Length: 125
Image (cartoon, rainbow, N blue to C red; front, side, top):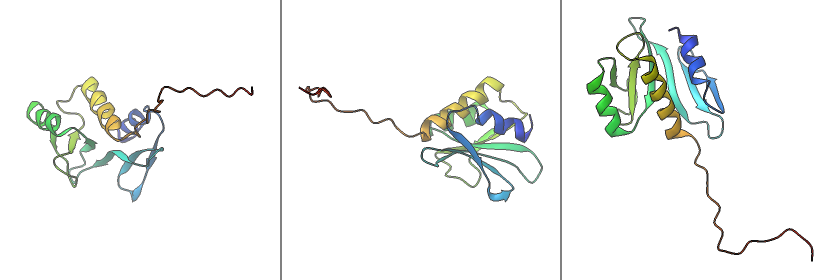
């Protein structure tokens, strides 16, 4: 998988755009509703492609034990972020699931409207 293919995979999520706050070194994938980052895509010093993804802390620990290519988030909060190396032991469907999970953690929450039992009508009487 190439860097562009990985970016395109992230762009399949709704209302997502790519950003380059560190010049062209890393692509940051953000939600347009709140500008929060859910993925950072780059190459390491050995030119290995990786993606940093937000993760629930318990799941993050589980994934690190289950896959050699999942490590604590490089240059990120190690509790909430994983670095996932591409082209190793991560199946494609698992990578897709991890991207979806990261996106779900940062997307804006939909506020439920409270209705105290009185429905208002727009009709004129």
